[in-house]
Amino acid sequence: MNDTQIITTLNSISLHLSQILPIIFLIAGTFGHICNIIIFSKRSQRTNPISVYFLSGTIVNLIVLYFGVLTRYLQDIYNIDPVNNNTIACRIRSFLVYLSFSLSNWYILLATIDRYLISSNDNHRRQLSTIRNAYRTIGFLTIVFCLFYFHILILYNIQTFENSFMHLQNYCYPQRGPYRIFSDIQLLLQFSLLPPILMSIFVILIMRNIHASHKRIANAVVAHHHARIIKRDIQLSKMLLLQVMITIICSLPLAVSQLLTTMTLTWTKTVLRLTIESFFSQIARQLAFFNCSISFYLYTLAGSQFRLEIRQLINRLTMFLCHKRLLEKRRIRINPELVVPNAQELAARQQQQAPKIDLNPNEEDS
Image (cartoon, rainbow, N blue to C red):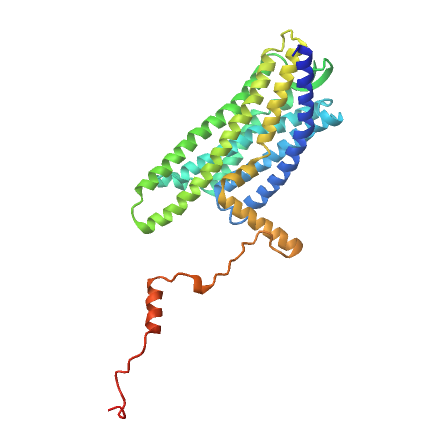
């Protein structure tokens, strides 16, 4: 396969990906995030700090979907570009997307830390896991990251580069020079490296706490109570571990792609090199968008309690629309004669069926 065939193939794949994937992310992500918001906003869920973190992550993921995925889809498919032709729109969109990308991962990290605290044997650490502390931490972290990314509102500009089709195209990028390298390194650290690394560490600590608490349980009554807590923590830990794995896979390529583009910006590149870089950038961007649209499906896959909440939500919706529960459990009627009795029931039946002996005969018999 020569260079021309490779370029044609990669451009064709990129075009099909940009046509198909964004609309899937928008539909699936919107449905999933709406379900997340309904479930995590329930009164029973608002008492759990981890639900607050999941709800916050859902909100910022919605921002990524509509300010990131939708604008890129309109640009690639319909040539509607409200961002790369207006400096103010360019800066606001970049600020919201990169801020939401980072906050999404850090909110999941906060949820992981909360699970570590609640599974700890130290009573003082467990008391730190409260709704008030969750809101405070989310507010503080959001303000800090707004300050971290505030430079985007000032130093991002519209720049013109050659794309893989050798056509000039406007892009919303940071100013060239040291600032652009700083911006890419910041994204690499705050979005792709630090959150997944810290998540992995705390998930390991959570599993260690759960294992240690399981060993300490001796009393049968206490064991039953703790078994329920451990089962719940294991489910949440599974949800978080799956989220961590997907986050690592989907977050790293985007930052690496942007950093490589920045480091080779002054190089003289062939058409094949530009095509390969554009293709890798396309894959990295779609992976990042994928990560921001699948949280609902990850929670459904890993958490049985979450699936129960979904069933209840669907039943309430179908009751409202057609007055019928769609996912009602069928009750199987069992013939009592086919049920094997236990020892007490068997003894009672034998006593009832035994012939009665009259111990006080009447006078006529005497």
